[in-house]
Length: 371
Image (cartoon, rainbow, N blue to C red; front, side, top):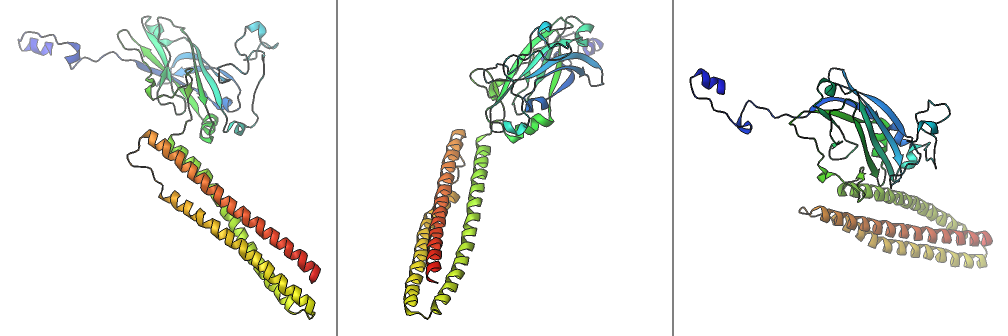
C-alpha cells in the first residue's frame, strides 16, 4: 500500500499490523512427525525408543527419546525403569534396568478387557534439533493425541537449545478397558508432532475443556457416552433375552414330546384288562394331566406380566429435549426395566422347567410300577 502511494505521489500511510492485508502473524510451524507404536502396552510391557522426527520431504529434523510405561492408578511403576547404569542388567546392553518389585506382564491381552488400564507417555529429550541449530533464538514443542482424547496435548515450550530436555510425563487411564481400545493398542501408534517456534509467535497450548480428567490430573480415555452405554447394556440384555427365548423353544419341544408320551400311555392303559389296573390307570391319567395343565396355567399367567413389561420397554423413549443428565436418567431407567424384564422371564421359564421335570419324574415312577 505504501509503495503504491509513493508511485502515485500520495503521502505514505503506515497501517497497524492487524489492519495491514499484506502482513501475516508469526505462527508455529509443523517441522515433522514421529510414531511410537503402542502394541507393548497391550501386554503391559514397557517400551523405550529413540525416534526419528522426519519432515515432509523425509529430512531428519531431530531425534526424540520417548517411553511407554505401564503403571498403577497412582502412577507407580510395576517395574522400576530409571535407575543408574550400574543398576542395569549384567549384560550392560539391556534397555531396561533390573526389576524392582512385582511385574505384571500379560500373555493374553484379552485379560485386560473390562479392567482398569493405566500407562504413562514420557518424552525425555529431543536431540539435534535442526530448526534451532539454524537459528538459536528459536524454540520447539511436541504435540500428540492418544485414542479418543478430545484435544491435542502439548509439551511446554523450550528455547535456544539444540538438545532440549523435555522431561514431560502424561498419564492416561481407561476405567474399563473395551475391545475398541485393545484393538487400538495392538494396531496403532501415537503421532508425535514437532512444532517450531519463532520470536513473536504464540506458544501452543491445550484446551482441556473437552478433555476428561480425574481429580489427580490423569487423562481418561475409552469412556462411552450415555447413548453408547445404553446400546451396550441393551445388547447384553438382548443376548440374555435371546438365550431365554431359546430355552422357551426347547421347553415347547419338550412339552410336545410329553403330550405324545401322554397319549401313548393313555392308549396302553386303555388296553389293560385288569379292572384294578384300569381303575389305577384312570386315576393316574387325570392326575398327571391336571398337574401338567396347572403348571401351564401358572406359566401363562406369569407370562402375562412379562408381556406387559415388554410393552412398557417398547413404549419407553427418551424425550427429544433431554439434555445429558436426562439421557443418563433414561439409560438408568431403561437398564432397570430391561433387568426386571429379564428376571421375570427367567423366573417364569425356570418355574415351568421345574414343574414339568417333577411331573415327568412322578409319571415315570408310577408307570414303572403299574405297567
